[in-house]
Image (cartoon, rainbow, N blue to C red):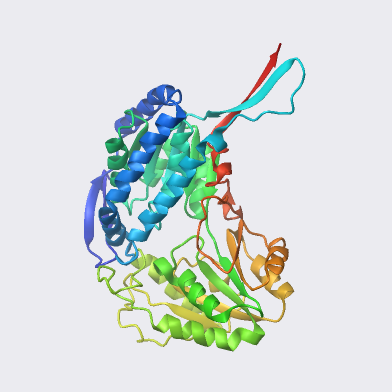
Length: 461
């Protein structure tokens, strides 16, 4: 059994850093410290908890450059774009703190003479956050902030691709002055992580990752009666209606498909275009894609970098090759992007047409810079194709008709319906999914529900 691990940077394929795994005794000490600290933390006034959490957010914002470099060197996102994740972290964290009173407020039924009745939210205890590498700060903050604000202690186990993010989070909360044991982190392999999920000191698990990972986490927790929040895969669709603003749809959907090299749970992975716009849309989409500056993410002029690892790029190359072999046409010529290099993490963006749902690229999560585009003749056909998926995270509609967007949105099996935007989380709205995308809610006032338990008070005068 290995006692340490290495992080390979997709920037150059070299070892970026090595870190030791936490030992079983260290893990037990963290669990014990979290349980001990929670007793005092839950009774700390909400205003004080919020102030301390806010200081940690301030620290991360002040160290934006270090956070951005950590993102770029560990996962390959262009350094020109990585600072935006810290801005997004601030937006989400500050919103969740601002609505904490509302999210944690007592609930009062209709008054009944002679009785005082109310429902009170209490913290669960210790919340385990299992965070992925693709948006390493954003995905973690979704749970960390409301969990702490609600009076829980938090243990963060981040992806083994992004240990620098774990360390930056720990530095931020330490610098903010949270009591010892309230926020802690561990470095664990998969087997040790699943043992941690099953530990009796864990009261809730928030997991963001693959469907297979979600099943493993759910199974590990299955012998205990605790909540498990699962944000898993996506194959998010877009529909460009006949009344769409075509230029806007093209600009935003190219970004929605290829930002972060397509490595986004809510990135656009398949597009359906009304036949009246199909040729013009595809032509514009290809033209804009060809204009990307694909290369070394440490170059400030780059706006599309490598995927996180060579094996991930190889999977997407295989999807593209299989689609072409089955009759699809690849519209970005080989060699257009000089940085494209088979066998490495550098995979150029690709646009496929003449695709259908029998192809893996239109059915299975790609999580990479490839998009399939199909023509449709009606709203009904578009909705049927959008729903023909094992996933349901987001769907975007491109139209000038808001009533139509609501009508179609009611028929789409998804967690979020967008109109004229995509690939964005509004912290005032619930982030959730259906089918193999998982279950649970983060963000919004509802995000506090799964991180608390209800106690009813029934007081007779």
